[in-house]
Image (cartoon, rainbow, N blue to C red; front, side, top):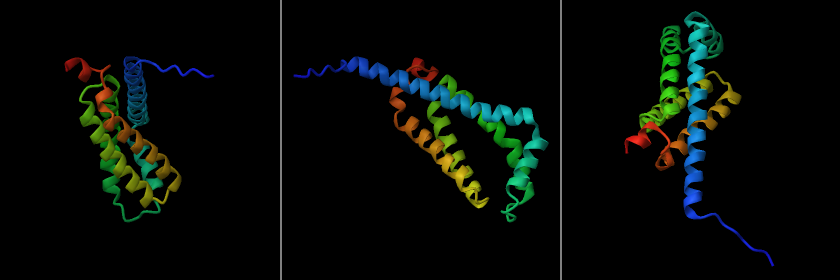
Length: 145
């Protein structure tokens, strides 16, 4: 005879909040450190990387790559930091989801199917965190409610 023991609903609820917080902070740190590393690398190095990366997609103007190389690291740094601290979380998740959507288009134009597939994991994480926003209680947003 087996006995099934289930955790009380309050424990499951608090476990979900803890798990959400760990995922949100980890994901935010990942995004933020993408931006930090590109800022430290410098604009010229990031632009050179992008120019080489998009050699196959010659229809993407180099001037667009220059603007992207200037803006993207700061967007990643800011959105990642907001996610880590849990401030303006809904905005950060929607904005980050739109950014990853643009990156997926870009990597497909560069015909980099492996990176595009990895970016879908990021898209799923944005989706998951946004859908489960009600579990965002260990955050600045959570404290403000």
